[in-house]
Image (tube, rainbow, N blue to C red; front, side, top):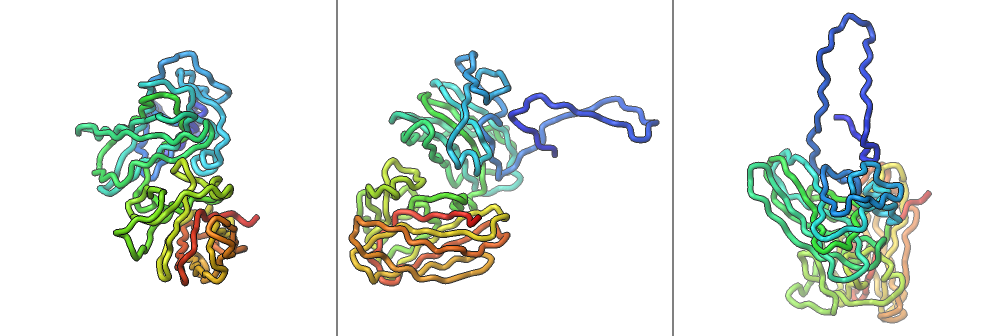
Amino acid sequence: MVGMDPYEPIHSLVVGFLEGDINLCSVTIEYSHQTPSITWGALAYFDSRDSSPSSQLRGCNPRYDGVDAQPTTDEICISRDNSACNIAHTSPGEYLEYHFYVPHDDDYDIWVRVAANTPGKRLRIELNPVGQPSYSETFNVISKGWQDYSDVVWDLLYLQENEYWLRVYFETGGVNLCSVSVKDSSSRYYVHTPGTYSALFYADIMDFTPQIKYGNCDDYTKWSVDALVTTDPECVQAISEKEVACAIGWTQAGEKLTYQFETDGVHKYVNLSFRISSNNPSRRMEVALYTADPSLYVITSPGLGWDEYRTVTLENLYVGAVRYHDIYIKFLDGNVNICSFGVEYVE
């Protein structure tokens, strides 16, 4: 299998006869099966439908197929998804199409990274297994600005071994798109380094009162966790799937959180940060980092008040060449709010 750059749609193949005395009757070029985990950048679609054939290219789309594209400033699109451009100026009914192959039955997630500037925008993801009926799901797009992206995730799809056609429909238009991914569900909670993420990006949780939901921030995961809206400026800046910033609250002694992050295998050290608050300065959190060099730390809340968040950083933590890492947090005393966690490389 040879990878092709989607930004260069015309390719040359040169066959050289090193010794001669060879007859050649044909050359065959065909698409190879792409299997999860796959991430397609903005212009790596297989086919498309565009209602305005006069493209607004802005240096991004050399395919000249009418699909409007522009450079993106979103760091996740650029670094995680390898997409320097985004699809833009979308209209109702337009779509992008992708093709992939599932080699074995399992649970998979479909991720679409999108942005919108006004509320009420929607997209529909349609999955068509070859020889089987198609099915689809419609999703609302968070509107925080044209270059303020979030991931729409259609998760825990049980897919059987087969070929699949995937279409992303812009039902309302007015949505920018920078990438589409199909991933094994087991990797769904790993966040990308570098980045600062909402506390609600946890991979697992131990809540002593799951039957009781406190707070005004609806959790979007399959677990119930107590969470409240916060206006802390740094909490607001964290990467989130919600239009408001949320903090996990009402924590009790012994409750736990798990976060997972992915590194590039090149940078060997990271800094971990946690944005926390409490009304008591003696409240502690135990942080266990399971990576190339498992380590255990205890951090203490500044205790300046529930609305007075501060960032506590663990510096120069060794992760080595291992790419996937787990953070286990245990609230030793409870009564600590956490609104975000961050992972940064040490250069």
